[in-house]
Length: 258
Length: 66
Image 1 (tube, chains in turn yellow, cyan):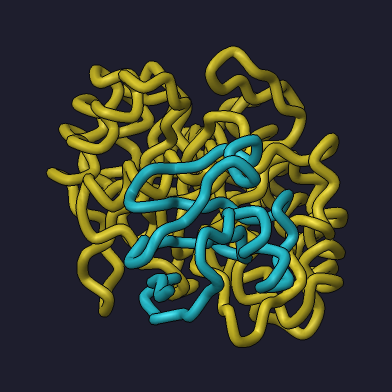
Image 2 (image 1 turned 180 degrees about the vertical axis):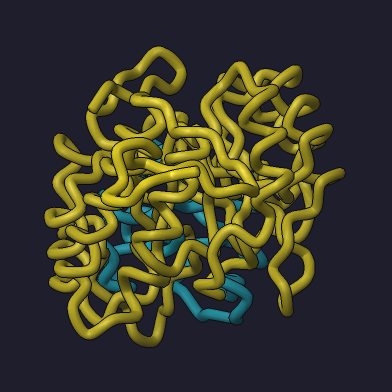
């Protein structure tokens, strides 16, 4: 498979992994290893003073995985910028998955606040990968603002419903001059393969890998889906038609024609 | 004196610095980020930053997330 390049940095894997919802750190690490991923997202939260937990960072090999802190929980641009700065202060490279989701029910990204935060963070030197609605106009606006990629959603976070935004994703992919990472809603390896066949540059998966009895097995399956989809895209898919077109010759039948 | 840490009122000894506060709270200074009155501190600041009555702190760390 050809390499993925984001902000001048090259990655062998086109599968990014979210680290939320795993039953244990061990399950999380097994998924990371089986997926072959090189980029993992993490979130920032208040320490529980009454019950300080082991940091999950101790389980992640920072030489092997690029940490992509998200701004989950941010309800507007100001909160997102604050979270991004905190993540950078934690010693992370200045990469951020920008996420502004004011509505807790659907967790859909706020396009106006996302663009506003992206403009600020780009100016501050962050490498910004915004989670966004599958809106081709917004994708262009974010690209013009200097984001390193766009991350349009396939379906709402955690729903496992696949590429519900397929037609809009196709337009985003066609227009983009920066990598398109389909994020959210991918529930099966076939969903990931479909996104890659369409020409997405990468996918990000979390719930489907965490919410299964076998995170390592599912992660390996997703890695194959991503690879198959990418190879199919590079090879070039055949066109679709409405009428059948025989694969076998239409001559030489064992009967007399006419 | 009283501090506000992560939204909760916490009693602390007078003139405690951030480094000592973290060790009182049994937190590893390498693995948390501290914001004092909305200003982000670097780890080098911890032992040189004395706290005063009413200071507002946020202490955050990385957790799993997508």
